Image 1 (cartoon, rainbow, N blue to C red):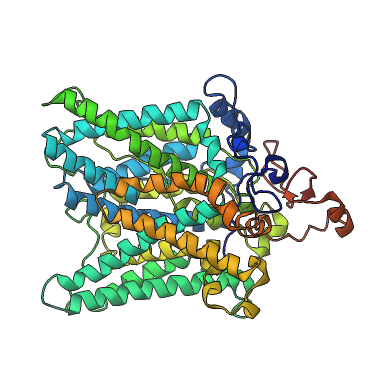
Image 2: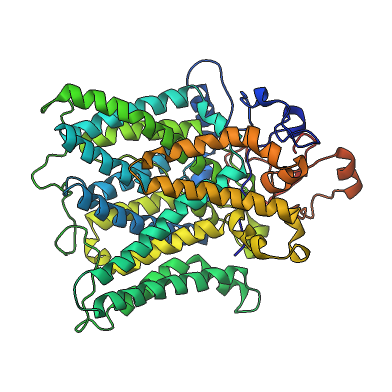
Length: 588
């Protein structure tokens, strides 16, 4: 499976000396903090200038966001991302219910995921960004619950004030365009963060499968669950790989099967779960607590709780306010990286989006959601990895259709449908969803996590560790440098997992934050400028120019550097022309 290219916004390395001199040493770390890193990552005068700029650039394209949905990719992407997001939300909602004595659970997770997502799909400047209560958020809520029990304050009051603090700081960050500095984190950090977050899904899914063998004395149920999980992963992987095959089936059939790989795998795994319906017990997803069909009244997980939270009521309110505002600071630090990484990795140049890049408005929306949601006992939300880049890839047109439209079918309908299905699965179709075995949900977590890991260059570079120098791919430069770079990334991921398994799990954002000085001061002393250009620069291979654009190789050499520039969609008409590439001298 080909690795996707992570690429940071264009930064002129020669002018800013970010990579280093010819000896490999950084000569100008004082210029590392900038006011302009490229489109969507600029500092504006005043307050909320970046948010206003996002809306001014995106909303003239609103009509095209609707009309560009008339493609087969819209439905297939909606179904794939519904299963990927819904199953992981179900797994996390069930987990938080166990760890908080059913104070918060699946009802709150599905409602927040569906409502906040639909609002963002309609009003956000980057509707393809997937937002949801993530695994780290589940860990944070678990720790907030433990803290509330320790100091004898109401959990929902403490969570509400934590949400207020998070939202306040996120709005400050959005208002000052501080998100622009996420561009300082290069592909070295991108791969580390993406692999770490994706590995959480893989571990959670495997843990769910393995844990069944310690429950009860009858081995038939966990063994059958293992068969179901294995079947789903293998079918999804096999069908998804058809996109890269050139020998099996006609091209259109291969692409169609690849688009619906996860949907087909989930359907067949669910059918398989009924093979021994009368002889083997199969655990299935529970949403409402009692299976049924038709509309369901939304009820909190905690029986007897009202939806609205009185943040100024209850015992020890002053303690809850102080602790909530204090705890919100490290959580906001994590959200800064998690949200901005999700935005960055789904808007890289290799994703080939044509409607621009947007960061500040998305960060502001998350701040608003995290203020309002906890006031109703709902969880926090942030941008999700690996789901956000996967949404863009799911909407990426295949080779068969590249000549008739844009590279990516950017629209609001696909994410809106996805979030709508999540909400309806709770309110109207719980009976259908409850047919899916929990083992299938675990398998979806594993598949989504593996897809996220496989799409990093770190994964594609791993064989270099055991490959003789003479056989190492030349695309990674010097073999010893590639090995050292790969081992350094693996060490950082290992440090993150080491912290994740301790009570100091919330300290992982500090590991990510440390990647900035590591990139500025440590890497230039460990690698030459050429090595860093190859291993940590914009690694996208040179694209073949379209027939409409002819570029002379000698001219490119005279320019000294070149990059393919994607013209942006500037009017309100749907994308109907073939994507063109142009060479701009200032792009590196």
